[in-house]
Length: 379
Ligand SMILES: *Cc1c(COP(=O)(O)O)cnc(C)c1O
Image (cartoon, rainbow, N blue to C red; front, top):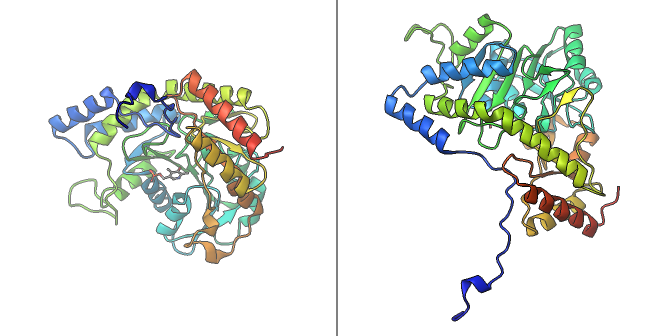
């Protein structure tokens, strides 16, 4: 197209990404500092990150590992959960929740969620408890805390362990108590799209030093002293490069969390009709890892809304289109979970990350309302 000057083509607005991991100058400088220092695996940065992360979880001991999945896997092993045990989990989560149970040698038993908060329903969890049940594994999905009071009571009644999957919920809280400070173990992820990251990484939080020691052995071939292996362990260590990046991000987490919550409020206020905005339970501090609306009408309507939004330059995603109980490794268990199926057919997550500008938020609201209208969404 000779003669057509670039500035004559109307510029399309750039797409607003669904997530925007931060890897800024401070993170790069921290990584370079560690690389030059040379102590690169499970050294002083990891120890400092563990210590500092404790401030999020009422000072409980923290053990850093290489992913959120490793955190869940080792938490279950440290609690002695394995062959012959069952663990009650929500099916409406990332597959890692159930995979960790299988990797530990136990079987997941899938239970329904609360349709408003998308978190494990305590009544459904109670129905799922049987003679082999060893633990409950609630997920603080999208950054909304699971109902830990009722789940903890249920666990106490049956002598079960509680492992929190807090991989999406850094700094979420329930009645003033932070997630991670409820369970016999709690697991966080530092994957790039989470509320804070360390490239890859995870953290296990436990109530006591003895269990923390077991976890430190499990993540490092069962060794405290080199070549004096005490138990069978894996290599799930965190690198110091990851820890140094995590420390930078941890400092920014309070500011980012407030921004996510402010962005969610703006979306709540702006979205006019059709889409069902996220519900927050009494006493819950939601940290909006995702801002997830329901599109009533089923997956065809939801998918149409998603396509319209993407065409309008608004990144959005479905977490999760297939509930875990319908995935290949778990389908044979034959779980019947209509509330979960309906959620999977209706959810759509809009951008809520801290890098959004007021103009982005206006664009998201306008595009979502018009997409819902065009798809014929009615409440
Ligand atoms: C991300 C995530 C995990 C796994 O964390 P990784 O660091 O990716 O291994 C587990 N559970 C939930 C709910 C998650 O969102």
